[in-house]
Amino acid sequence: MTARRNTWQKEAVRSALGREDGFVSAQSLHSSLRDAGSAVGLATVYRALADLEETGEADALRQDGESLYRACTPGKHHHHLICRSCGKTVEITADEVEDWARAVAARNGFTQPEHVVDVFGLCAECTARRAG
Amino acid sequence: MTARRNTWQKEAVRSALGREDGFVSAQSLHSSLRDAGSAVGLATVYRALADLEETGEADALRQDGESLYRACTPGKHHHHLICRSCGKTVEITADEVEDWARAVAARNGFTQPEHVVDVFGLCAECTARRAG
DNA sequence: GTTCATGCAAAAAGTTTGCATGATT
DNA sequence: AATCATGCAAACTTTTTGCATGAAC
Image (cartoon, rainbow over all chains, first blue to last red; front, side, top):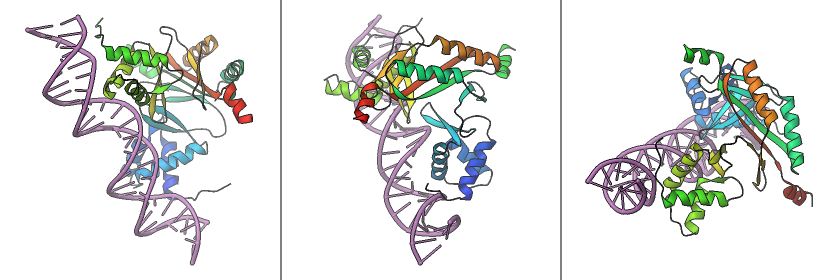
């Protein structure tokens, strides 16, 4: 196991990501850090996020041509329920879906199944705001 | 209902997309058309694909920073089983997953749920090729 | 004849990379 | 002291946009 070095930049990214509520882009994370006085290079933010994704500390979501990241519970496979208005996210686990994905893959002769499951909707607050 | 105009370019894109087996990028579709003698502008391909997605004639899939498109059965919600080696895709319908998504959204106070479900794996051929 | 899609080229947006420097081990 | 991450800027990729022309209505 090739251990990566510990740098305050990487830690700053990890911590800033943890402070966010929903998914954030690398660019907006970079701005936040810069505004907060932690001048970390944009390239470093990208590199740190790629590392975090690889180690399972963060989830990535490609959307509208950009990658969005969010800190996540490591080691456990899960999905997201995402508000398409305010961006609020809820982690959801879905054993039924895991089983279904495995079954559907097998039925079609596919092996080594992975899956991407995300549910988008309007959260309670945003629903109320629109109704009101 | 504001109808769009019919142009041979739009028809060429629709038809080229229908001829593909899996998901293709706008760029590769543009190359195919060009190689086949149908000189359609790249911007037009992008615009046509956006239209097709909007009318439900095509599915889009954002991956690795690019959008991939595929002709699909219109009007019916479905998902994809995608071979991550050769790109072969199978359309799958999943009523259980539809129900689950709706339930999960409701349980968390979310309304108007939409979902993204894709299963990636190795298709039978690619599995065999690797084993061999 | 008017409207709107095309095509080109330029711009925009997001991400990656090369290389010198300096921090981490 | 040797290694490897950083930071900057430049390169790259994908997608969008402005505008003149020509096709569709």
